[in-house]
Length: 103
Image (cartoon, rainbow, N blue to C red):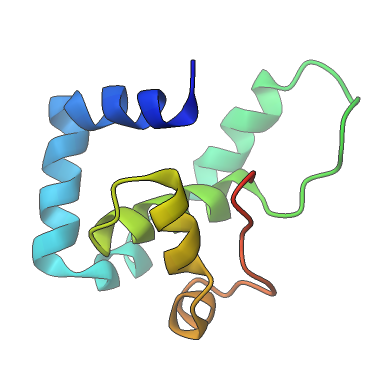
């Protein structure tokens, strides 16, 4: 399944719709208040092999970046990726470098 199709399916979920509404209305500042600490442990337990490239960013940061892009009104992977390349986004999310499109 193509990444854009996956986002389309995700955006149809009522819980995700509600979260996006909150993010758009309250601004991305709400991301600072959310606790993403359990995201890393969930991904670590789902990982079944040590093969593959090492992570550049933890899943927690990736989810935060994805939600930041949605809060900025971006609805495509490329749009979110472009949004994350801004200095404001990098400072807000404490990123060392921009999260790339494939990530």
